[in-house]
Length: 435
Image (cartoon, rainbow, N blue to C red):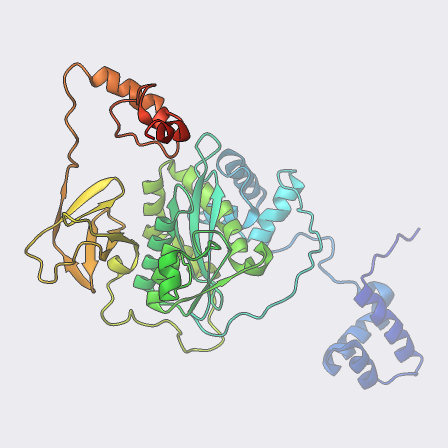
């Protein structure tokens, strides 16, 4: 009794063509053209078909183990290592980690083994509709900037934020870990990018108030015809960087997808290294992790010209990335800033007059500078003087001040007017009594 013969689609097609070739309906050259093979291979396969029939068209290695198959002991060892150390890792990342330990195999091979051992499940792919946008052609033409909030160091640790920059043309990435997506954290990330690559042409961000603001103009901005900007926006304006805002997360999909790479690889790398602090995470990022990501995922730009520029002459990055506000000079040549009193010294060459406004610049390291007509002023911080309180009245004055809490109340008053005070009397009766 003859068994069943299993044939592939390609082999069944050869069977039909060779039948027509045997009956004389086709020539050997025409048969080779239809099958997409050479004339020599067609003649060899046809001779085997004439000698053995349909069985001669079946591949000789079918049902035999592959010569390149991994030994069963190796497969068991890999699955054991995966279960002990890399449980939950994706096949691609797990294959890289296993290769560093001497267990070299392709990630697709590992994927099949994990599926067969029920240690990995196929991800369901949903169809997503989005408008396709071509990458920018030049490196530095557009850099996407965004923060990724995640429990990077594990569920037992609080959520932190990874400030991430991704070049649109090449996919080159740079990131810094911080507590929140603050102006200072974003400034430090852009500062680092400029030190490595130069000043980019444009940034692509969301509409968070760190990057742009929708507040109304102040009176001073109206007089000088200045558009309201955030501290980060002012820094970008000085450097000549255009800020382009996205209307949806999908619009800046390049950096959003890059967040997923970090949340997969960086989280597991932090767990392997036992890192749970922001400083140690930043050290890991700067000492090779980002370089490895760029080496693996970055690509060459379509055009060779680099759109990054040098820092404009006369600008210093530690002064550009700062917080600037204006304050009025008081009659004693002091200004108030963040509950601090700053005394402008007399030996300044261009001493501002009382009532003029000076620029207060706070650097990222906390240092404060005063500028008047683009010149730095020498100053010193002094402790504000307080009015002395008479002995025995401190408790009573405290009660009066606390009872006068609220908007429009002068807290400096040391007493409350009595009931017979003229202020409390009727206005008409007061003037009527004087007639």
